[in-house]
Amino acid sequence: MGIGIAYVAAKTAGVQVVLSDRSQQQLTKGLQFVDSLLGKEVKKGRLNNEEASRVRGRISAAGDSVEQGAFGEVDLVVEAVAESLPIKQAIFGSLATHLPPHAILASNTSSISLSTLAASAVNSKTGESRARQVVGFHFFNPVPVMKLVELIPALQTDSSVLDVARGFAERMGKTVTLSADTPGFISNRLLMPFINEAIITLETGIASKEDIDTTLKLGMAHPMGPLQLADFIGLDTCLSIMKVLQDETGDSKYRPAVLLGRMVAAGYHGKKTGRGFYSYTAPPAPPPR
Ligand code: 3HC
Image (cartoon, rainbow, N blue to C red):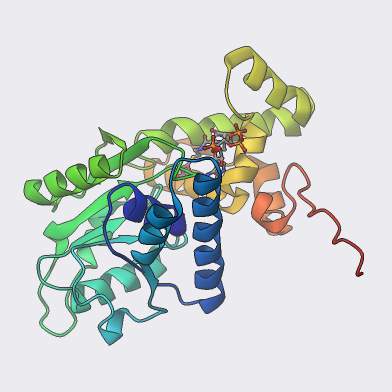
């Protein structure tokens, strides 16, 4: 999602963006995706070539270099790594150490506690906590299309930080909702049990995957059925969010579907791995000339 966030920040909010990823390949892929989105905007007449190259010029890639000063002038960072608490905690420790003192530390987490993440935002050189500058900044996929940002203050967040984050989300053209720091926030507390129930409906043989999805698409005007949406989000992400809901509430109504666990164990993580509830095989390459 990071590349979508960077694209909207550069295009709609008009700010300079520095991308960071441990994988150079991911950065290259991300920048190619930006080029293709801008190409489409030009083709559709929504941007001219000059405007598109101005947007592209606002995005640079700095590799995995928080510690090498690439973020020395940033005002706000949006962390969008995998939903793993230890990885996010390590990143917040590093950001707290290397970002300029005024910078806001935002997380695109979909379910992890912001108060827990904020507690790890400690400058390792001075021991100073930056917890009051941490905020949840939760986008939806595909970021350029979906109009929402869910804002989640940690217990430690300063109200001025929340105001700046809200203003920036609005500058990105998004509508903001506010959620308490509770498992899954508003969005995934409602969405994930719905997706999980669709998987249980499939695994108990009530209906085929196609009929489950068609029922929700045509009967309730959802843009995607729940199983198709699960593939789109990533089954590994769905499972980790259900586990957070279950572990943190202790409520059995959040038990992940057995089939969801099996799919993830098998490596069927949805669209990104080419297989989930559906298959996503790339069209065969054209024969060599
Ligand atoms: N990036 C950028 N733009 C994209 C895109 C992407 N990955 N995928 C589609 N689009 C754009 C297309 O370019 C097109 O734009 P245009 O109208 O300006 O030309 C527009 O979206 C519509 O695309 P398509 O015509 O190809 O396809 P659809 O009309 O079927 O729409 C969809 C695709 C927008 C993905 C639609 O199916 C949809 O809204 N699905 C539901 C998505 C959803 O629920 N997202 C939330 C997931 S939950 C989440 O993210 C939170 C996390 O915590 C789990």
